[in-house]
Amino acid sequence: MSSAPPTSDHDEFEARLSELADGTLPAEDRRSVEQHLETCASCREDLAELRKTMDALSGLHRVPAPENFDRDITETIRRRSRGRFFGRRTLGDRVPFELLALLALVLGLALYFFLRGSDTGSLRPFDREPDTPAIHEDAPSVVPRP
Amino acid sequence: MSMRDGRLVRRLKDRDEKAFREMVDEYRDRVFSLTYRMLGSRAEAEDLAQEVFITIFKSIDSFRGDSKFSTWLYRVTANHCKNRIKYLARRHDRDRTELTERVEAGGGGSLAVPRAAPRPDAQLEGAQMEQILQQAIAELDEDQRILVILRDVEDLSYEEICAITELPDGTVKSRLHRARMALRKKLLKHM
Image (tube, rainbow over all chains, first blue to last red):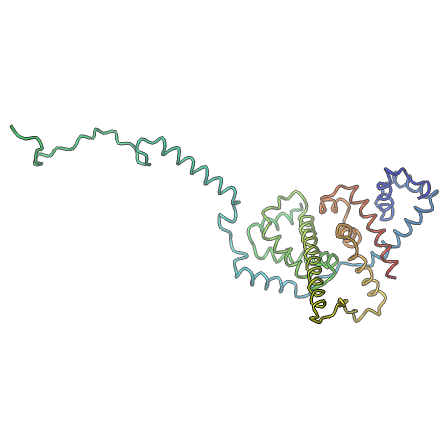
């Protein structure tokens, strides 16, 4: 580019040229680019080339999906999932695995510390009644009679 | 995100089959067109477009609604396209290597890579031009290709393109400019 913008701004200037070509450049920027174009034949040529390319591209339209697209996707889903694709998901599907794993870890640790602090070493509460054996009248005495 | 898209997303999150069909009906042309322009093959494009919709439905819970639903859909499509292009390039390289090895081993086969058969209506100027453009786009690298398609074919705003590609505004604009200039050179070569 003759009398081109400073090299460091070159990318930015190129971008502006593209914006000018597609009509999205703000008015104040447009004026400065147009001023430069008045003195720079190379940039004018670039702009003309750019416009030709964009004219050609404007002939490309959105390509519609094939007629049978809906049917094909339904068949693909049926083949792969055997009817489970749209089914309501279980808790495991809805809640991330990491969260479930963390919850299990916390519960496991809570259980561990509870058992460690438990008097009985189990979930059963400690029975504080005196553990003297019941004496029945008709039970044979283990103490020899005098 | 519009209220209509919000309702659609909620129903998709509820695994509503009818909502899935509505989504496909609404967006199928946009998704297919992008996959077709990116890949240049109708069969590959249809297969990939199906994958996109299945992915969207499966991962709908990860859509937080920070952007428009269509932006997210385009982003998923663009990522799928890039992955498929890499996969096809690897497969093409592998096939060529295998073919070369077979020929070198005297196993027969032709080294001529079959070119796509010309379309029956290729005599028509418009169709010819489209073919030339499609081929020129296919020769761009994938990062340039996506920008040209989103801006010049799909007619999306720069803001949407930045959201889809997750690139800064300046990068999108300068890269798009280079893509257009590269395309111009390729078109001159083909015409």
